[in-house]
Image (cartoon, rainbow, N blue to C red; front, side, top):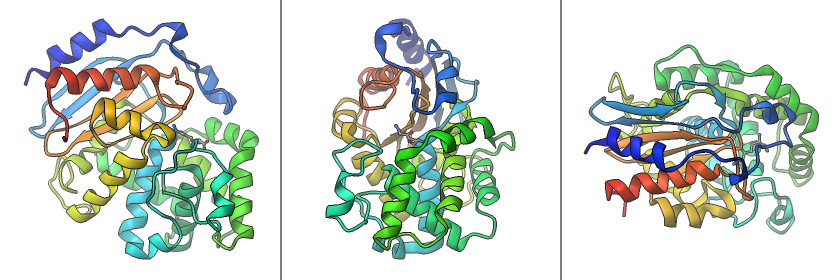
Length: 304
Ligand code: DON
């Protein structure tokens, strides 16, 4: 497969235009990004890599971080985890509060904000040094120590994250939060603030395209059974109330973030990350979705 030619076609066909969508502004620090950024990076099973545009520039991974924290929680806690968070698609926006009351404070899945806040709470209970442990894990996955929290993004979200504050307090009232709510939010806002490039993200997500093995060393980081489950949750819940649309158009498991990044994996073939900060009304990268749809169309390959 000539992936570089396919990426070149995608770069030519899909130029960033101001009317494609809006940069996330509810976290003021994120609104400073240049909306015209556009990059893509594809890492293959055979260690070859293909890229274009701003693929080596760091951006705020935001909700993509929820895959990393879920992976650690699944490893450390096993199926205990599922007593506090479900695995059903929500059909509602990522920051919705509506179904929590009906469902007694058990979030629908680990990728909506409520679910990832519960995961953050459980990691606070089991990890020595959660912020440091998370960074170490992500750095190890992509074999790159040049990955850090962006303190200004974390601070900006802490100041304006009223919905997340509501979610954690409401779940505390319903008995599904154990630790101090401020400590949980501090961890959650930091996880979302991690800055990474498309290249780093694609390499980190090779874990999910490579049966749980490290892309470079071959070390088994997580069991293939966990990869099956995490990829399944990405497929059904990775894009909130647009999960069906992404699945229909792209046909791969993936995860988005309001920083404009999307990562998707084709098990046993490749991992691909794309970044364009202009979001569609559901909070997913508008151009990113188009680029990935074109990738699976032009390659003629998806998981289906
Ligand atoms: O909690 C929030 O609202 C953000 N830190 C993350 C949301 C997000 O990335 C949703 N993804 N598309």
